[in-house]
Image 1 (cartoon, rainbow, N blue to C red):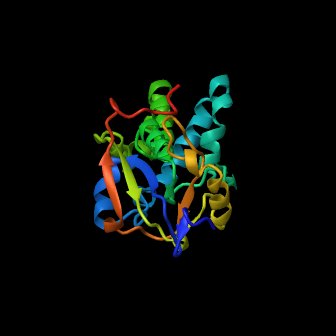
Image 2: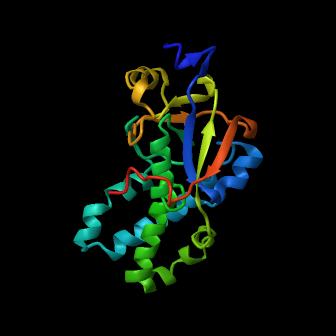
Image 3: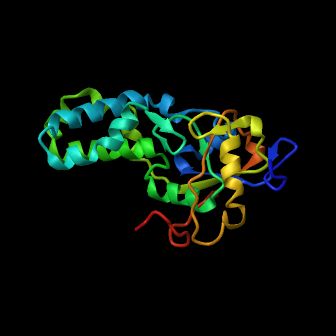
Length: 225
């Protein structure tokens, strides 16, 4: 392994995690990856529930049929490869600050899972309110989260042990390191985003990471077309 990337079993480059201030207190208190907020809010059952209602309500809707493939894969928690992964609940980190910032700014709750759930919930509210109202989903604890004020945050982890990370799909991180080596010089060049991610296997303690709140007026979102 290249000495400028790994030394003494630790990464020599920082890893970034873009998320939301909804989870800031938990990260400061317990560390990054210590708690799974999707478990805490029973988010998986909620997601499957709103997806099933959308399937029922918009069965003949061409727009829903054309765009449901992402929430369907999330509902099934599918993973095809390191670059096509729809499994949530794990913590993912990237060596590209721009990519992490873009994720935090793009996903309303700092979580693709929660953001997709919110979009489906709003769609049902707008177009199938009666069906939603008679379901138990309106009383689900995650609905209260949708109204909480929050801001995007960026978590930066230094000197992450190789033993604490896997590839995005859960395999060995060495292939990702090998691919990353080829782009080392331009990794955090202005305007450059990189689709490299690692899955966190062990908690990063609070004193090994820093948190900054992102200013939407200052930060550029590379995913905002």
